[in-house]
Image (cartoon, rainbow, N blue to C red; front, side, top):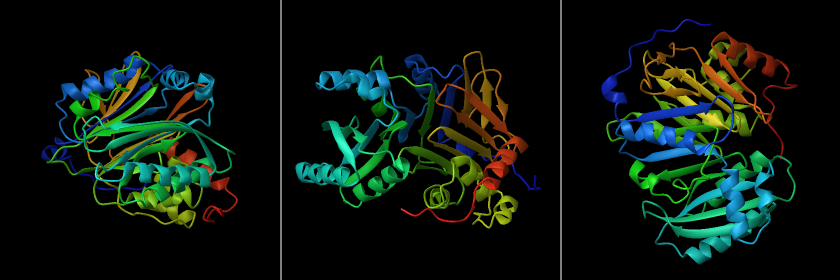
Length: 349
């Protein structure tokens, strides 16, 4: 791997933000797993803007659909799509929702469920929807473009719109914990990705695509990673590797961001990537039931991620989890890129 110069993490810069990802080793969704993540953030004193990304809670959605008179088994369909959309309270909510419903139809989705109520922090109206695609061609890309189309409406912000994950957001962790879904016993996931910001923090949290999350510390644009994923069909592992390892990008004629951020954590569909650009920026704890990746040591056996050494997680639909560290990450990236017919040809829609 190429040589870089690293510095120690600035604790004053980092203490305002908390990042915690947790993966259940059996890959079985449980409520206890999600609550462990939220409780850790609460114990750390998280007070700023908060967000949590998790697998679609299928059992919870089976109950929602049944209560709405729909077939609850629809929630087990791998293409079942959930949307979390925030509408400004000053907007004409009925007009906005009518426009968004029309967009869903134009992009080939069948709306099955919707409800609207004040968000947990009362800053917006929370429009929660569930739908199925009329066909599954380029589903992730269509959801990304539907998200962009929705957000052209000036009163709309999409927290998430996807068939694998949901994201809940609020002004504070306390507000997030008041969200009715979060307190439901069927609120379950096998992997959770939580973030809380503070006024002193240099961390930046951004939605990645339509239902992923990217957190970083340092000057960079999420657009570079999104471009590789959506315009060129890259996986997250390929996009992150190509963006931050110039040698790999050069070999495949790819654009490179060229500067490793102090900290990078991203989750998209069934992959997640972590990179510590500075010593002590990210910590890994491997306990009996789950693996934690956090911006602070979690538990008594936390080990810092080595600067510049990427760590990735790949989850399969069959329940298998695979961890890739350092050179194994770059080897997997090189194999994937070499198997592409044209590594830099954009996708045509």
